[in-house]
Length: 441
Ligand code: GDP
Image (cartoon, rainbow, N blue to C red):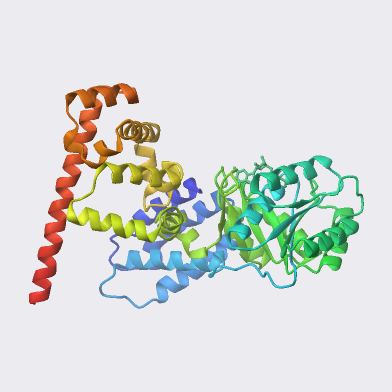
């Protein structure tokens, strides 16, 4: 996500690090680079200009904090201003109304249908009963696409084929929702290649019938500033309540994300980060700012982990580690839980400096290594995993054959595991010692 912007900003920051005293002159180089980085990312020029004016004013006016280097202070100011630019706080969906209605609008190909499905899935996970409504009367294929998504997700879809009147579809959907206890309606509306008057008229009529609390504009982030122009038009015509930026995983440069709020004045509520149905994330300005500055997004990583791992499991594991009772069985479980977090690349990207690290390590090789370890562990019996000391030569030979590796690779894994266990035991003893010393003091 925004790799090029991140690396340019980090370069700009190199000028700032270690700076003793800030003056307009010695900040100029760094701020010029920040400006170029923003413009290259397709940020609206006025947004970039105002942004830098604010940073400069704050940096020159700030009190010097003794313990912090002035350059670091500027980086903090840039971070704060980025957060403000992105909207400061996370804007939740308004799901008031019975049923609640969400109108998904946007140009053709922006990701409207896919995102309707993703949103339905997210709301369903939060305990809501969504209904997907196919309100595109021009493309029968759009109805099919939504229905297929609904089926995949196990969420009902209202798609009355052949119905040419959007308002009739809306009335039908509202009736269906009431009779089937669905409490959130997600309307996937028609898209065009460009916004035009007939489309606007139709959406306005639909809005005036349904009275949605949310009109979400789905925008392809890869189209940069153009996305912001489109947004301005849609907002003038419909008064949108927010946006969902899609395709942030692709070659989006950041311009749309950074300009949207300042130009349109509405919040970004979600971002689409992939083609899969769970690739939709609530938009958090401070987390996005951290990611843009290459500081990682630990909060999102921890949330992902919390979804994949129960707190109870984590506690049990910690206890085992401390007591040196961590077995190969636990190791296998760990590997599997890590898999649930998704590909290594996605995890790395959320870590501070992860993008840079990604350029240096061979990810495919790492993935292969993890798969090999999992295969070896799976070829063992549960008893062998619980009591690795019984793994004699003939057992190791059997495991190697069963997992398609050499005996040496099995030995390597066991050696690594032993080293890890030794280290854990030492750490456990160290912790106990520290605790006792702390108690005495
Ligand atoms: P619509 O015409 O606006 O309904 O657009 P679709 O939902 O059909 O999406 C158009 C294409 O964009 C499809 O191939 C989707 O899989 C893809 N797409 C949608 N959202 C994302 C995203 O967040 N990331 C990526 N990589 N692709 C996406």
